[in-house]
Image (tube, rainbow, N blue to C red):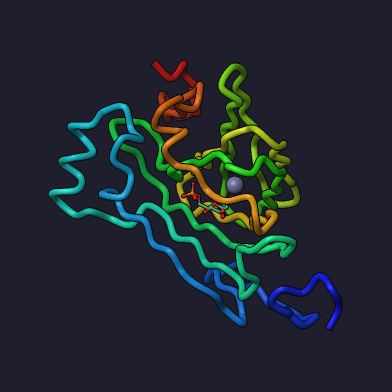
Amino acid sequence: MNQYQTPPIAPTQISFDVESGSMSPTGPTLIRRASDLKGCFKDEGALAELITNLNPEIYQVVSSIVPEVSRELPQSITTIRPGSVSGELFMTKGHQHPDPQGEIYFGLAGEGGVIMYDGHDTKWVEVQVGKIAYIPPGWAHRSINTGSSDYKFLAVYPGSAGHDYQWVLDHGMGLRAYFENGKLKLEDYK
Ligand code: M6P
Ligand code: ZN
């Protein structure tokens, strides 16, 4: 054991399967349904209707066994289902890292991207297979499925970064992503 291992994670191989969006050995899986995204979509009435009717899964996050603790480097695969709420594309809740640190998203399948917002400037970065989106420290991030199939990406981030969801509810994300006339349309948050 070396001085930095608290707790020790042995050097290991982790398999990931793009088709199922799974990792092996596997860690915790998080499923977020429409009811978990209150406050995220502009049309709150349409979201409420979706919750009442089906409350479908919007996305899931499968984590590896590497824990979210300081000095470790956890990974997860997020699968966002295709769809929209009044034209606003299915998205993740989005978060800011309370301990500002960078993160990378590798595109695995489907079409998507990430809205980043630092409280002043906002950026849209597409994430396709073979591309990496780099999220610098201090930029809140929200992923969007812009296609008609599942959008999957692998995230790698410092274990001590943390997830602040309230920041996004308080500040917004600068942009909203819609599907209109057959293509992606980004609009000011409002
Ligand atoms: C990526 C990473 C995770 C995050 C997940 C879902 O996999 O950034 O840390 O939890 O996306 O995003 P959110 O936490 O905003 O729901
Ligand atoms: Zn993050």
